Length: 118
Image 1: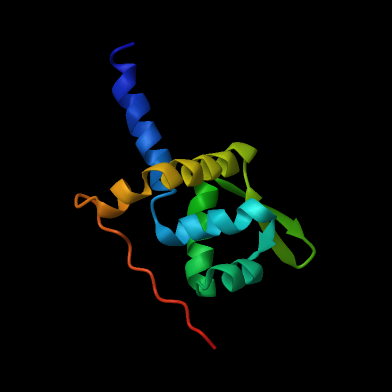
Image 2: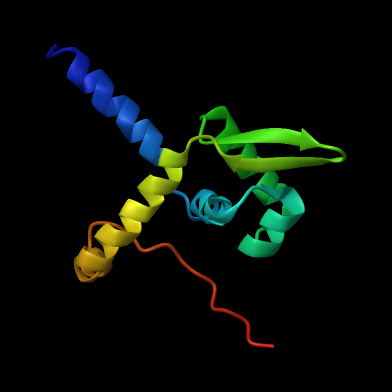
């Protein structure tokens, strides 16, 4: 059992890696609402189509999203409702510890482009 724990921890770290990139996370957040095609994902996240497609491929390979062909379009959705639940739990946790996370000097806060007001 003791030798399995480092492997389990490594696997869990690999799972969280899928959530650690702002582009992948924005895709997962968009898919929390409903299944979307790539164009809709691009529209909701502001990512380029090639960037979104690359991250969707990564998320598919890691089992966090699934793709279903619907006519001409491929529609993506979360692979398991618990992915959405994990994102929701993160929102709740973050509301309680946001100040500490924001002020943490050990992790860099990802650069976020300001919203463009038109």
